[in-house]
Image (cartoon, rainbow, N blue to C red; front, side, top):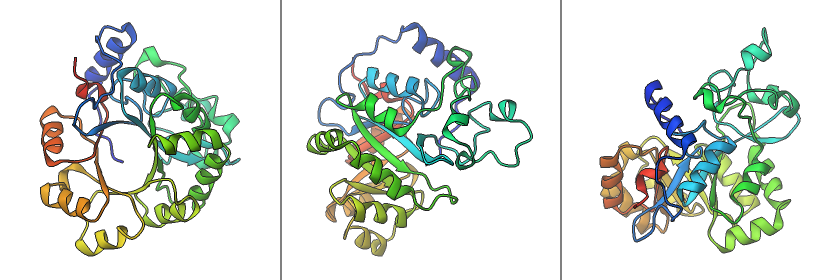
Length: 284
């Protein structure tokens, strides 16, 4: 999902507040009551570096109902929590590995990725924050909050759905408990990847992300196998929400960061808000 760039001054103030613990946040579920569930986009990525242990831990502390992460695979087959197809924006890869022909995540081994600083770009207080594996994410959220795992749309990895399914099968206790408590789902912008994952693990709820308004024919096709349609909030209105619900699927909208948009989307009856600032939905 595309995340709006947070202004530097805002990032600095937010990070400082998070580090000093002066936000007065509660640990109650963010959606306590009848409102939509709150999904922390790449963790609490408005206040900590996205897709890192810091962002995921903060989202849990803030009471998010689930954490959304992006799943990619290293050259040697490890699944990692990382959004961009390349490393330059959120790591110091160019400094650590100068003159590389490619900075694609899939061109690096896990040992090479572990050397990178994935926090300093966000704020100096997060210097040294590392890229983490999906297995580490599962260990962190297990019993604490839900997980919404996005199969990356990066074009250079066609077997990611199978890789994620294999990882989940290797965690049978987590998989069993997460499904029983409705704490796990998988999504993708690539319909083929979402369908492939569904075929491999039909018990795990699967969603299709879209930045465009889906047509009636597209929704009817998705209703045959998908559990969620997750549109960008800018293309979402009452008619779309009602149509998706009428076909038996849930609606998770992204990426909702402004309070007035949160209220509007909640008023439409969406099932979840995916946001960089989950604490905005927490009631004092």
